[in-house]
Image (cartoon, rainbow, N blue to C red; front, top):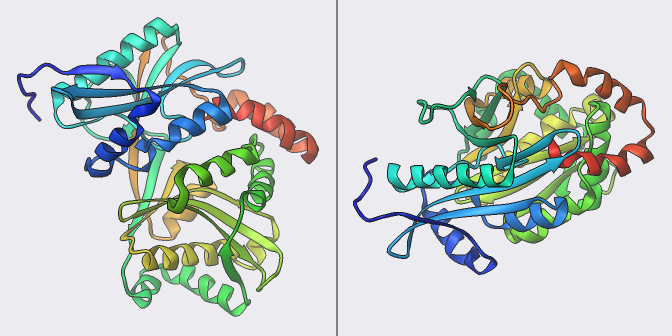
Length: 350
């Protein structure tokens, strides 16, 4: 991309800029659901993160955007990130000039805010900055969706397809659910993994902010039965992004999670989606293996860091050995405690 001669102006958005921001994001080829405006309100109101949504303009016309959130916690430090809880929400721009202008302004904001580092999250590709990067930890999984349900079923690897059929024989059912059910199942899952849970109001805020473009699918052990597994998904253009899951231990015995992925595929196809994006996973985890075995394609994610304090890329994730004791201790805590304390810690684990 070459940069036009007209000067680029970059500014921080105000509340009134939401409609113009989303109008640009809706048509920008590289934009994803993580760039949409509702994230700004969710991050500010639920977690108290100060957001700096940067817009690049030429002659008053938007030519690029970069959403940033300032994350500040006692346990994980102070950072400027694009964006916490999102797989990638790095700069989206019409050309190199607009992108560089956005990054320069982000760097200025990071220095003025006194953060330890600026983190720009994107898909992997050629280095565009002389910054350290991490492109070996996270991948994003996705697969094509066909309009024909039979084609979608046959596209599932044989072993997983047999489990889907077993779930159907088991009489499992799916329906749209609410944030309270999502929270209960998600909290159970997170506790077993030794990770703090999100507050219920986070799921409520996502449903409210994204409206018809957000839904929670709940799998039960039969019509009107016990909720076994769930997934919160966001829709953007022709893609379904399934970003938060939850289940109880019994879900594995009745293959509820395999049935859930089939029901997600079926619902996405009915909505006209052509891509099922099941979010990011860390290499070497059960989540990574599950998605890979289901036939999803892995795209490496590239996170670039401008280190303003220290000289090492931060490793604020559960695979960091220094958190091993904390994870073990968290699993031993009673559920009532982790459900209350978890939301106070999760803000720095994006």
